[in-house]
Image 1 (cartoon, rainbow, N blue to C red):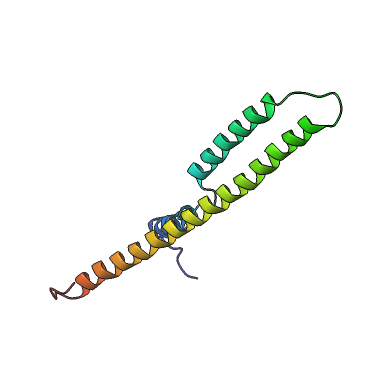
Image 2: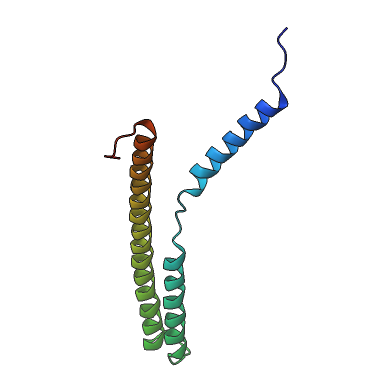
Length: 117
């Protein structure tokens, strides 16, 4: 029968697993925060414009204009959302490649004592 692993070793393994999981999970969030703020601001402007249109009892020109305001807002919002998502993805890719390059440079300096690193 083998002796159980010491508690200290198991705790270190658990901490290492938790840290690596958190690093992978927190490295990228898909929803761009500032992009959604801009999206909300355009929706507020669209609601003010649509709310200022005259109300008609039956379907007519004012309802048509109201619909066009919201259709324009939907297209604008989709464009802003996609642009913000792409911008954030490009920044995350740039950040991760910079971090990788920096990590490999520091690893190079630790492995050798050359002045090139």
